Length: 440
Picture 1 (cartoon, helix red, strand yellow):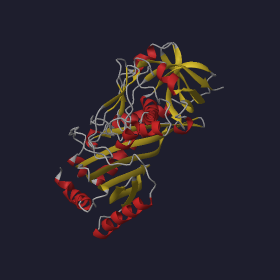
Picture 2: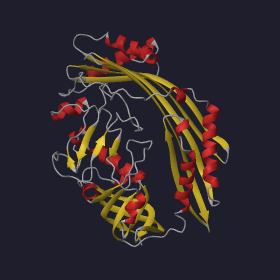
Picture 3: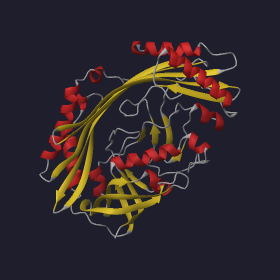
């Protein structure tokens, strides 16, 4: 246990020690900090540096669950939270599956999730990072101007204790920078974006991010509506990551229990191309969502969800596992570090193999455009046409549509260009056939 969270652990332990013989208690105590900086045209436009702390308590008594939380750790607040959770348990509805997680013997995979360099990084330097990222993007092309340039970081310390014997703590911090650009030409404006990611700001590749954001905007200038037809698409890594996040949510036991998963009752079936192996691995510290403990206080672990196209498992919290007669997979809180096993070709090499298609650079309204039960999706998109193995004219104001089931089965190539992004999934270029494109 890290010495920095000993005070949090002591609070959690003290609350659990007050458990009555006929009740179960779970306590989570946390402390966090965050920094958000935004600059525009060299000027600091937005700055937030915040600290917070809190406690949440779950009480289960005779199949009834009560919860309560507070944003302070004073003795009075802690006592009130426990009392309120007990009162809510008395008023709660009976749930035959209500139960706290038990230690399952899976060891915690220790990771380098805390950077002292980041924790002590000077605020003035954080502001300068956002300004430098803006300068690089603007200087890349005379047609480019800045929407905004940002730096963000955060840190979280947590301690768990339960009457079932779970006692654990964790700490992690993270940071990233992002820039949004606009490119103007002949009365037309297009937008672009890029991230810089690292364990601490010294790992940021600002040069690459700034130039990528400028290129994304300028290459869409002159975009037209494409004709409507069935096409082969190449998903940019960011777009792939967005789709993976949705697919991951449908593979959680909570979704299956609520009958909101298109994969229900399909374990063991071929649900995707044999090229698809999808894992959730929060023990891979390269992932932005890497963590040591799940929301139940159990060890995070690597889970293979789809292997060579075959659905192998759902992920579970302790609660969803009980309801489905399965074992927890350390996923209370869902999938946080999804990734596809990469292929052997770069995005340029994938494009070189395509006679006619579309490179999908970005999508709009994806989450609202997907039905998690039927798998149907339709989303706005923009990108570049592909002809004879090279990118051609830019296209915009069109939609791509299919089903998640068909999309997974029609994957014809997976790229080697893994892009670690500040979200719950890593990205990789993905080639998919037979997608409906609706444009002009």
